[in-house]
Length: 102
Image 1 (cartoon, rainbow, N blue to C red):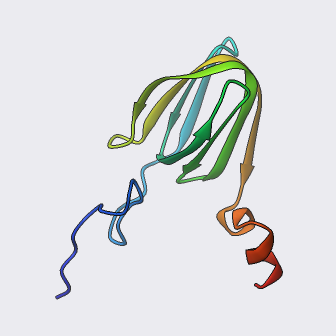
Image 2: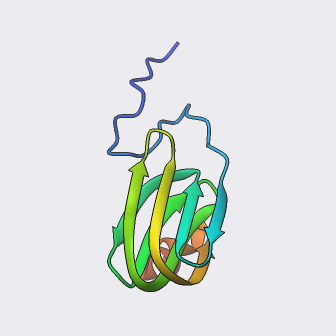
C-alpha cells in the first residue's frame, strides 16, 4: 500500500483528498461567502481569483478584500462591492501554451 504524505503541496489537495462541496452566498452585493475553496491564486481590490471544487472562480468588483480565509475548511469571506462572478473549467484555465499544445 503506497504511503500518502497528505496535503504537502502548498495548499493543493493530495490525490486521496475528498473535494469539499462548493457554494456561494452573496448578501447585498457587499459580502460573499465561498465554500469549497482549494487555493487562493491572487487578489487585489478589483479582482480575486481562486480554485474551487467547482472550477476556477473570478470575482470582480470594487474595494474587494479578503475578510476571512480558512483553507483547511475550504472557506473564504470576500468584502466589497461584487459586480461579477465568472467560472472557468480547470481544463480551459491552463493558459495559452497548454491550450496550444493540448
